[in-house]
Length: 117
Image (cartoon, rainbow, N blue to C red):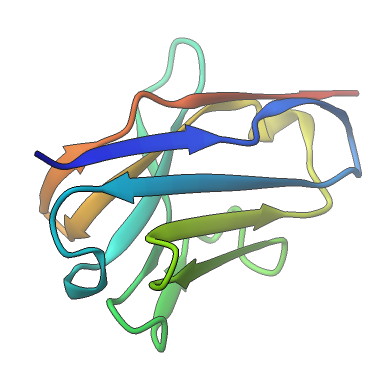
């Protein structure tokens, strides 16, 4: 059974940085694209970033482009989200998910990111 466990969230001031990690167990991690989503209070879950199986292709939501970087280490079965120049509007629960657009089969439990102004 596949499990995804996020970590690295916390409270940070605007302009600061955080690095989120999502550790996968079960399944063959390197076969799958991985993704980050977020959900702010009262809002729908939204796409943040995706990375293909090899790490060679990435894509970002316009709202985070140039500030966030998704990466992966297939030897460690882990995907990362480096978040720089954080803004209060980045406050949300961040989730990782396995799969490709429209076909996400496993989700983590989420990690809270709070950015204070």
